[in-house]
Amino acid sequence: MVAALESADLIQRAPDKVNRRILKARLTPKGRRILASCDSAVHGLETLMFTGLGDADLALLRRTLNQCIRNLSSGVDPPARRDRSAPT
Image (cartoon, rainbow, N blue to C red; front, side):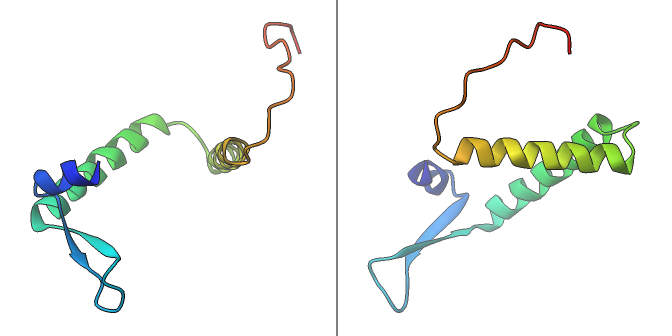
């Protein structure tokens, strides 16, 4: 992946000044332009996606998604999945 980004002139790699075994990657001007355009596109998508959601809804969504990330990052086997088709 890093080699592909470098080949596309999106990043450049250079040895660390202190530890020459470390290769630091930095965005090139082209990489910064593409990142900026992606940021703009994501902002527009988020604006559309979150239209009609209040602050409390967004806070709950953020907490729920963060818990999902923690669950996926934990490396713990998931408990048996409950039947989501059953009424709650």
